[in-house]
Length: 163
Length: 347
Image (tube, rainbow over all chains, first blue to last red; front, side):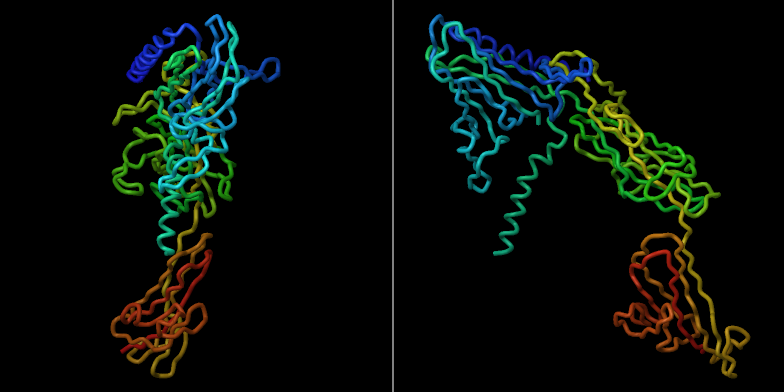
């Protein structure tokens, strides 16, 4: 019981360490990823759904991933494209990607090609192709329309189930 | 052509089913799920800006199922020792676990499989299948389940004695409760699992109970339970009698005639099955005794004459077995009284 706990702590520390310097390298636009889950609480008989950090997570749970970005460049920034691979051991939840003022496309081939949901295909084992299902998506891409003003921020999000 | 098509369909079906079937229990506990996004923009450079990774570990999902293996009452007789009922315990979680097992008699009056509990089975023990050979045997000595992998099932036997004083139709219902224990140490029963309370950190493997409520446990308690019943049925009886003798002097009666050379005896074989259900694969055979000769064409089954040939009337003489009357009705519904007669001459 103790051993895997230490191991996973080390793994997380490594993952965090790898990604942090990359984040610090660019000062023009800040980007941050958040993972949350919905928790239902009952207060005075009223059901309330609020978001909470991912503490307990078991297969089948739905996780909300949000990417927050902010323009620190001091001038408008254009051609913003945010790409997010569907996390490991996770399944994209159909119709869950959202982002104000963005065009959302998906990839079902590991990020090589992006298209709107109806236009994606995947190759089957026998070499044929079939329409891609949301569960086949490997990447999500948000293309920001126009420019993001100086000091302005935006956010995009999607949901995925733990396999 | 048809054959090829069939094979292709089977392969497709397997491919479609596998990814889901293999992962019913889900991602293994301790797996780190990590998410990060990359932002590219006019000012961001060729590689863009990466977000920091947000990570959490998949927790220990505890879920277990217990089910009666045959979905029917186990037929027993009064005074039967070591009567076996069979359950299956399935790990529906995402972690290798041990399970402690507890069998108990349920409260009188409980109903199951069309019967009502009115007595307690005695000296019940629980044993997990060792895997050496199917069925309860001497190799099955463990009273707990050791190291059950996610999605795997283990057969569990509840073995009880039936009191000698019980009557036909009496029923005892036993419950089996499987409690999830920590796995990871083969050959030793693990410690109890405790659901991690309240707040914790995303970086540790927590224990989360997601099990449902079984017949004899609560939801989200790391346990699950099922029930099976012992029901008393009267054992089947088989009898053979001589119902008529015809001697050379002309005497022809159920009794009082002489048993001498040339006498013809009528034998009656009767099977009585008092319990309810189906008797399957029923075959009754009777070899002609030494120094006697079968009277051709003398087989009568439940009052209907049968031929000696193997011709679909489910009765023959000397065909299925030499010098033997064979009556093979196959599957018949019980309760029943099934009888046949034949005649034989003393040489």
